[in-house]
Image 1 (cartoon, rainbow, N blue to C red):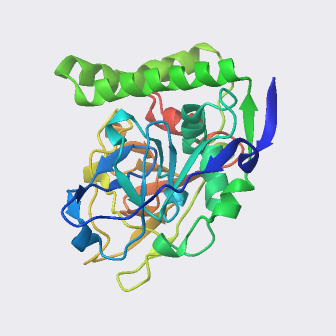
Image 2 (tube, helix red, strand yellow):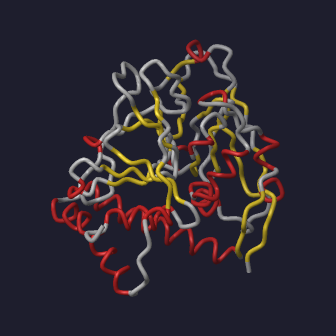
Image 3 (cartoon, helix red, strand yellow):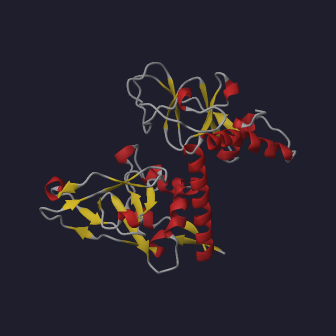
Length: 304
């Protein structure tokens, strides 16, 4: 059974204030966007920290960067983060009652489309540090919460899938070759259902949000042109800056699908997980009623 629960009813905010002492060394954490985990900053001293408010991190803490929550900067602290510190920008939470909520389940939920949408609605503002998630706003979010065993099963299954995909993208040549076959295989699977075909326009709309060189780019921090998309895999392999731009660019948002119409046989397609700019040799497709993944995989299928 899945209940709808208020975050503040199942999580407690933890503020373990640390007062830096002269002669001691400290290490701060940072959070990568889109659920990519925790990173450790270089060691620092009490003098370098100055009057900065810092708080101790413990394993099992559910962490959110309040300035980048809208980009999915959420994580769960591991044993490797024991005793490290975070600034007041990192909200640290623990379950109110043992066994009621699995923080890894919440990590995956807030990394999903539904969870990210909630974090973005609760982070008002235009972009970057102007979009701040407040404590009350986070506590008032209502999330689906299955029974604890099901939460754990979901978290374990998604962790296993994440690890498998990571091994494919960073592993040996055979793993990367297998990844290039995934869109084609999935396309064949979709074809095997003998569903009727529909025009692309029934699935998504072509968005032409043109940005001129001198225009404000808004929340976009990266340029993802065709050179940064890997053919036949649906993977982004890099990005460039949005500064020093020449010529027109197109703006895209998280959830949009980028499809390169220049040399389309290369099947350069990517489901965006962040706001950015792309070249005018790409279509920016925004899903209608269908899921973004359906549009993404269909555009990458061999028959497309």
